[in-house]
Image (cartoon, rainbow, N blue to C red; front, side):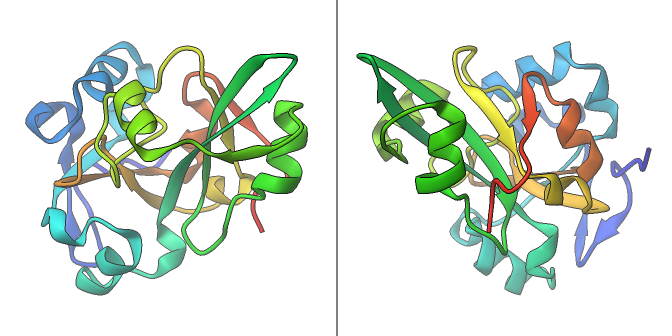
Length: 183
C-alpha cells in the first residue's frame, strides 16, 4: 500500500493525519484513532477560502481526477429516513436519482440539507469526509475512487484536506463499493 504521509501531490506535502489533530474535525480524529488504516493517511493545511474542489485543484496544481467529493443524500421509505454519504471522484457526480435511490431503496433521494449535514456529521460544510460519519449513515463508494493513486478528500474542516491511497477508501468503516454510483 502506498504511504502518503510524506510525499507531495501537485504542490501539497502532507504530514501524518494524527500528528495534526488540530486540522481535523473531532469525529475524524476519533475515527482515525480507532482505525488500523490511519497510518496511511496524511493531512495538509490549506487556505479555507479555496477548500472547494475546483479552487483547490487550481491553487495547488492538482488534476480534478485526484479529488473525491463526499455528498450526503437521504430518502424515505415506509416512514423511515435512510441517509448515505457517497464518495465519488471530483470529476463525476453521484447518480442520486438513479443508482443511489435504488441502493437506498427509497422513492426519492435528494441531498441532505446543508444545516442538517453539518449538524449531524459534526463537520464543516465543504469539509465533510467519509471518515468519522455518524453510525447510522451508509457509506457508498464509487469504484473509480479506488483507482486513484493518492486521493484528496475532506478532513471534516475547510482548512485542511486528507490524502490517502484511493484503494484504502474500500476499507473505510462501513464502506460499500457500488458499481455505477457516479457518472
